[in-house]
Image (cartoon, rainbow, N blue to C red; front, side):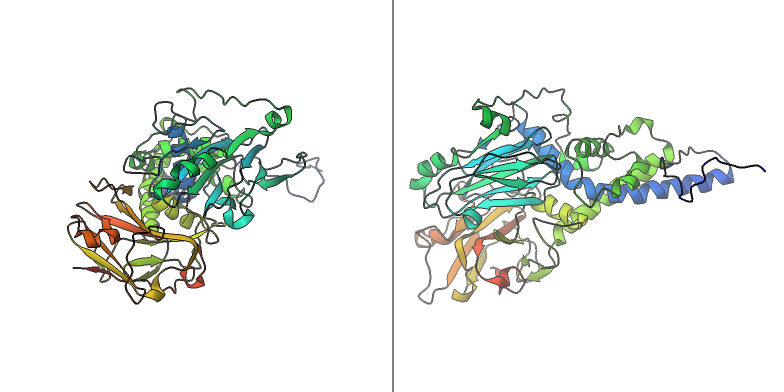
Length: 479
């Protein structure tokens, strides 16, 4: 009796590969069906891979800038760039930066060993936070004045699978990907306090565990221009609409890995040549796959930008209030929310640290524009309730950058001692290009010609309504 196999197991054999059809055009009717099927197959997978990968590609783009010695905000891998001054209109590392605190930034590779973050004694500093983000821009941890107090302390950032032993007194911080980004924010309350704040800021340090144990200085590796970690297109729109997007995405996934629970996506993405270890080369694609992925890029880019504009969907008086269903800073498997927030304000933090409320419209739905004058009136019960501070910062559009106004002002915050409140505890903020009378300049937020957006940030908010989309946001009224 003939047998087909000597294997008598009732179990099915494992799948050894996932077939991806290669289809070129010809004149046969059957080919037309196969061709369109492959176009749609590549398109549907491509859109999902694009949305999934957009934040990590944007993150890699920022890292490539920092690793460039000629970039103004250069920092070697595994070392902090301690910014000595708050961000201004020259700041181009990422969009919508704060303008009233000091930044320190560092990209860290955790593939070989943990990295130790040393936090100094921060004394009576009102606010500081070391936000640890994985390679997809999800917040893995916040080591901050809220969570650990005024320090000092040592924290070991460990990548997936590390199971070694840490020195006594060192707290482990697990990062779900093999690389991470640290965004340190240190607040100075007045210009006079800036030197003292800068001194504390510079005492935040990083070092690989092996160097800490051996007591040796860490010399960051040299990343040459030919290194793939620097070979990333710098124009956001070009990268987001070119097939090279998938080439960069493969590098991201190969180096950083995937978040737990998302491994199954790789089997789907493999059908278009995307995933760790894949070499995505647009020149080797068959024409059907190329057509499908080209369409996927266009529609994926539209999706990301649309979610960027509506990532939080509670609109009130021109402000976009947090929607408790659509989280920020930690996204689970909501890949579109993650991409939309990364596009609008990459490295957004979680609700336990702050609330961020953007505005691009006035109270009746007209786009904000520097050719007009606006007033924000806050009744006493509308002023954000915070443990640390709140601010309103203005950014030009579409670049989402701080403006270059002759006054040098880009923000109004609650720590400014000159702010003038009404006798009833209310506050009026005026937004206009020209300087108002000397008596009104304390509450003046300058703008420049063209469209702009606002972001209200509340650090250490104590009013839960700010996180539930229920806060009575003040109207942005155009004169």
